[in-house]
Length: 186
Image 1 (cartoon, rainbow, N blue to C red):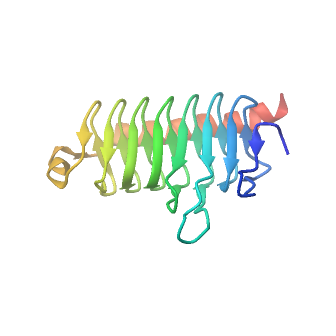
Image 2 (image 1 turned 90 degrees about the vertical axis):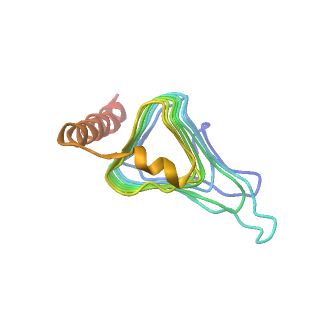
């Protein structure tokens, strides 16, 4: 096991597909599953080590295929909860994804955004500096830069993604999945 991929105190060991790349400065701890062709950038922390007192178990953090976790991303889950990041999703620099949380496939979470106690639908764009807490976002929506979405009435602020935004999200995934293979060759 690499020094930056660590067993939790409860004995859970991360599972990382061999086609994925984890930067040496990233830290992956506990019950974490990382899918195929993922890129885990510098200073990323994926830590899942909180044991549910009622069940004695840890719910997994599951990162799908072709996901990129850019520099400084933090993923963690409260005891008894998990995080799921769908395939072909980008988590941009320094965002925080805290469970309980699900992010649907083909989504994008921007720089310094925070998502907590939420389900983000597929094909969503949570823009830079936005906060989503305790409200589920329907598929194909855009959370504007700096928005704070914390109640169902805030959903009225959200527009549908447009062609340019969807193309951007696909391009970011494509570019960063290339990193996963490129860095494995270095």
